[in-house]
Amino acid sequence: MGWFAPLDGLAEKGLIVIVRNYYREPADVPTRDRNPGTPKDVPTVDLREELFTLAHEYGHFRSYTEGHHNSEYSKALTALEGAARPLSESTCEIIWNEEKRAWDHARALLIDNDITQLDDFEKRVAMSLSEYKKRFIDPPTEMDATTSHDDEAC
Image (cartoon, rainbow, N blue to C red; front, side):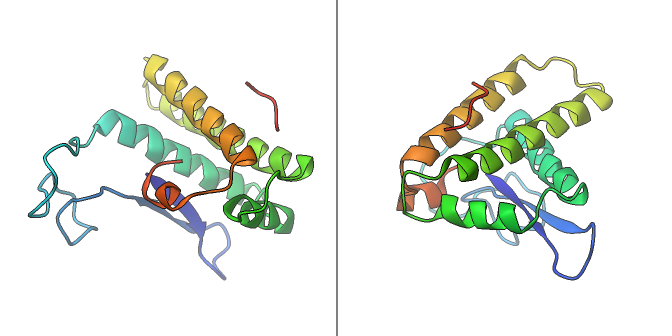
């Protein structure tokens, strides 16, 4: 799971966060060690999936630097996180376009870095975009806060 957030007052700068649930603190120090008491059924980190998440969040950063994170996007994101459903068609389109754009930037980043075996990546893209379609219809649940988030909007 991860996210990108612009840093207020710092044009073209932002923060990318990748979360590893149950991993030893401090969180900003890479480790494969688990916190004591971690349930045994929690899977270990899949570094390839984590790479896809990082590339996708970098895609949001690129989109931000291109000027796509404007007030319309902020309003759409607020609506997506809210409980009111169904979302308006324009809100769905804004969110859909941003997610698709982030995955497109991610794909380009991977290819630019000689990662060309993209079958698993493309499956992840399809799954993620499918999840967004569900979120357009169903409001977020408490479970959504602890889990990770065809080409038509709504």
